Image 1 (cartoon, rainbow, N blue to C red):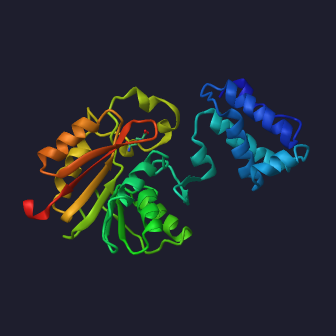
Image 2: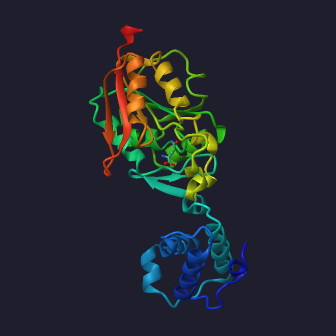
Image 3: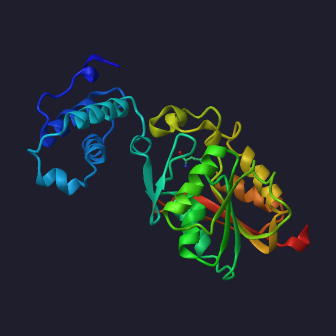
Length: 295
Ligand code: GLN
């Protein structure tokens, strides 16, 4: 920690604390362009208030324990710890989800996968599997829109499964089931109308892993072999044994992987293969349909 990080602001008013914290984050090695916003989010977390409170009462002073808690959080933020891990949650779709270092932090890009799955026109009581569910984000978002779908989320991490169950309860989505399984390994023979997944897809040696929030996220949820496609190859192949007649497999991936992934789908005899682009025009989701009888 550099010297500046150990200092605190003597003025404990909201305005002074925010100014101190934002300049500290800006000057830290892990400086980022959202310093003031970060400081506000962390202060709101310590005060258990929303941002309008900070603006309405800039001269209010913090309790000594709030100063200590805020200072600690700011120091961690300066070291690069993700905001979501520091406050313990991230909003995704219409849900507030707890996060922990056992899981990836849900990303806004993944909402594209949720939207794409909802547009497939599946049966009212569709059976749905979310592979590598993490916080449960995709499974819970789908269940929140389709109350009659039977949704199962699986993850190989026990801690992730525990967290996903907690997120289900806290969002009143207890019909979603979660279980521990390394991909399909613990699933008994059953068929799904839809399998969705945000698997690891980053190349093992990608420089991207040295930047920002990802440095603190579980590598097992991020990397997948030299070209990032090891897990996707496995999933596309294995999913054929778990898709019901004309079942869909929908996968999130990196923005330069779409063509390779369409080829993987094709060589596994999927049909109606297509990729969908995010609001930046980048292909981030690829899907295909598989007819059980083709096996
Ligand atoms: N979308 C993630 C990122 O950009 C990568 C996570 C993943 O591999 N599923 O950090």
